[in-house]
Figure (spheres, rainbow, N blue to C red):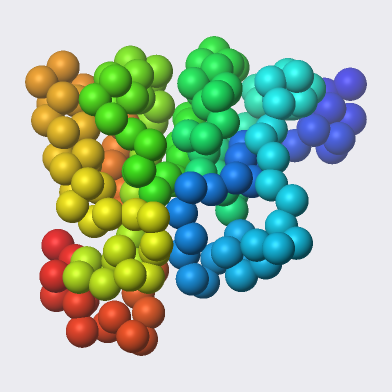
Length: 176
């Protein structure tokens, strides 16, 4: 039985699940923006998520990210809680625009392991990623970091998902 179980349901290092095909930004390079007129975006339902729960015991990292903004899904924190209860490391990538102080506290309290903030430039970010504000993102990162440290936590780990384009290569030294 163990042989067939391993064959049919292998252990996976990680899977990525798009929990939202909706977005509040318009990044010029994103298929969500490029194909706006044809894009059919929707949120992953809690019911559908429960269908994958039996498989989560075989997944080390569940990454909640796709072409949409994860925090537009009203079940985001439910997904985190369920996956954590199944033993998964859980991460996400966000544009950060829907995160305020209340959400920062929920992020920390949820046990989310990794949160990446998507940037495309420092000086040019707001132009390249319409609907985002670099100053707000940097403030959120700083606040999240301070609150997590004040609670004596190392998580969520904060990552920067930085798209370095040839048009903003001159900003490379500004990244740190």
